Length: 611
Image (cartoon, rainbow, N blue to C red; front, side):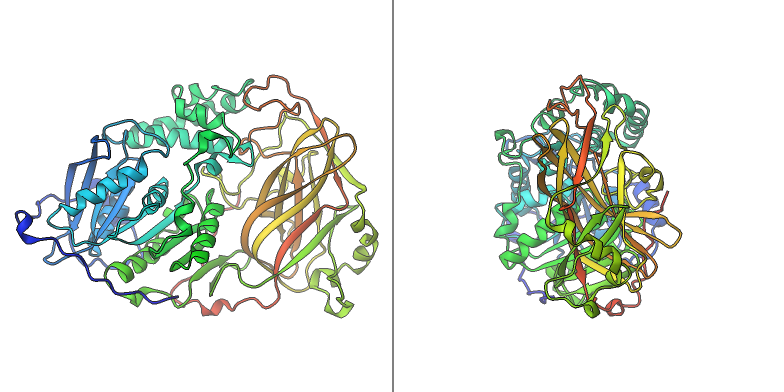
């Protein structure tokens, strides 16, 4: 990893105003109580003070309510800007205000426009860049400001960082984006398919979390009680209102625009900020984070632009990264900010990338992501078999472990790989949609799960390799090139990679969904991105390819008629036929990095519980 470049703080002019006298307020009691429950964090360097309820003018003059946390010590300290639509209380107050003030930072924790008491009206993306710049302008006038700004935060708190980075102020010297968003469209839609569960979760969070814990808990319980009605209504449009306590015009608009090229989404993505950014940026995500693909897109853009970048990927979901994973996430974030704002690179690791590897529950340090790998092709065959295709010129002695265990199956499959004959079919009924199970979600049901009950359904097909005689390591992007025909012309196909252990338990690794339009018996070919992973299939385990017609309510069900899922009132079952030229593509590592390179103090991290 490149070393930190020392920066000279721009000191405020002492003659510009009176000397700042720190107020005597302590951080909120609930924040201090929560702080006391955390274990495994670095020891605090300072006591923290609190200056609540400051009014910072937004770009249009609306007051942005802001809390200021600070170290109770003499000297100059850099400032962290944390802008949130979720309020300024628990958990943001202890996690960012209190903890980072204890480590030697001023922390400005601010409610976005229209939330948490701030003036104006909340908009999902149109105000954040201007309001972030207005806040930095306000910082320049503060007597305690030393001229250096860093940003930090998760989820939408990451989006506001990318928005500020579109035109970064000169004081911005470091960013830490944790399980962060840069493209609202991709949060709500997957190539035209509505991510229904995300839409409901975001609608509830944006509406109620900034109003306080009591209202947020009540809203959560109401959504759980009324979820089934909200996701099965015909038509779907507006049916969420009883579950979310009323209509949300911005959510109606989001759900009604499934096309990424629609003018509605113009300016929503802040992806271009990473393409020319020069601010050192740390990215943190989890393999089962609903925004994991956005994090890898951010990393790719930053690397191509030559920006100093670090990447940490743990065995976490969107929420568990800030819960079970918080000791690692906090340590990573603190080391980056101290390196670039305090000129103290002592906590930086020697490599740019650290990833958790599933299947063996270890951490690996890498120089880049993805590491060099070979894209290997795995084909389905009759009888539910999955076999790896020989590379051109590969001899029998050079076969991989799965191939050596399945020579007869592979030989029988050779002819089928070159044509597009029907292989198997299943019936998807949108009136009884294939349920979603685990994976990269915003909800508490995210993560790895036992897929046994799901795979027992008639509308789910699986193809499984023989038991492995050697471990198989895959590190990088996974995809499936699907060849599919239907009897109605309209279908979605959900494709998932699973690890089947010696006891037969099938656990999801990564997945994706594609939308198909077909004509007659002629198959359509669609390549479906199945996210990215780092996973070891152990000796005795089997590789499984799972295919179905959807994952509801993670994705809105396809009505089978060609009508919009929002407006459809008629549901038509569809027979989906998979053809023999469909292929699962895995990023195989033949010489995996040694997990012993990770420092011994970073112990294996428990993965999400299986249910």
